[in-house]
Each structure stands twice: as structure tokens, then as C-alpha cells.
Length: 71
Image 1 (cartoon, rainbow, N blue to C red):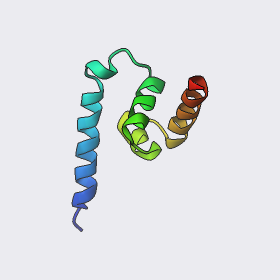
Image 2: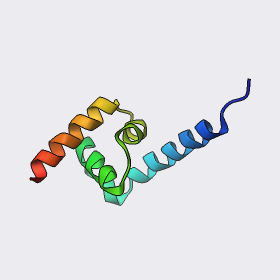
Image 3: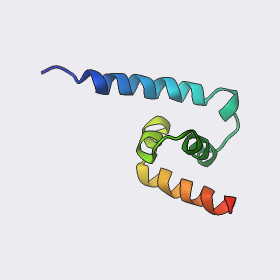
């Protein structure tokens, strides 16, 4: 049984994004801050969850808190 090349590529891209998130733009941000930035960029909750190693529920909750603060 062969591994799905799309899934492998997705895992690699998630790893690259994780590394990039630790650069200057994301330096000093909390997990909630990183989630807000990634949502602004256009990523979906499930994608952000994979990138930062949290559950989709955590991401959705943090995004909702961030939206409430922004009002």
C-alpha cells in the first residue's frame, strides 16, 4: 500500500509553516495571537490546528475569543 503523496506534501508544508511561524512576525505572540494571525491570512480552523498542534475545537474557541475582543 502506497502512502498518499498529497498527505505527505501537506505534512511537509505544515512543518514549514510551523517553522515560519516562529520567525519575527509571530515572535512573542500567544497561541491565541498566532491563531488570529493565521485566520487573517485565510487559513481554516482545521489547518491552523494541524499547524500549531492543537485541536480544531481549541482553535475555534480561541478565534471566537479573539473576535469578541476585537469588537
